[in-house]
Image 1 (cartoon, one colour):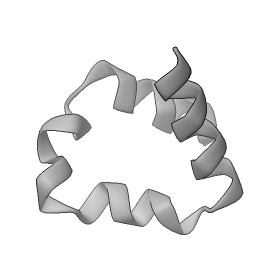
Image 2: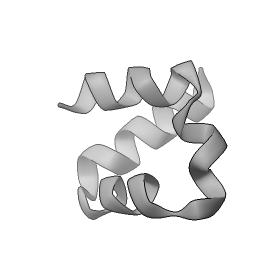
Image 3: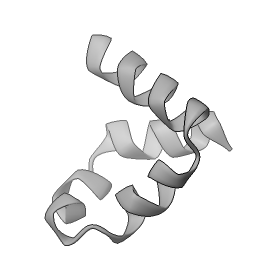
Length: 44
């Protein structure tokens, strides 16, 4: 919950982080995580 809130706040404040999350190869497994999907739905 706390990590989700921190990421949500960061993505809302700094929209360029969205592109970073979508492109970074090291975060590929995170992008398939339900938390990532929830984040993307929440900020769109």
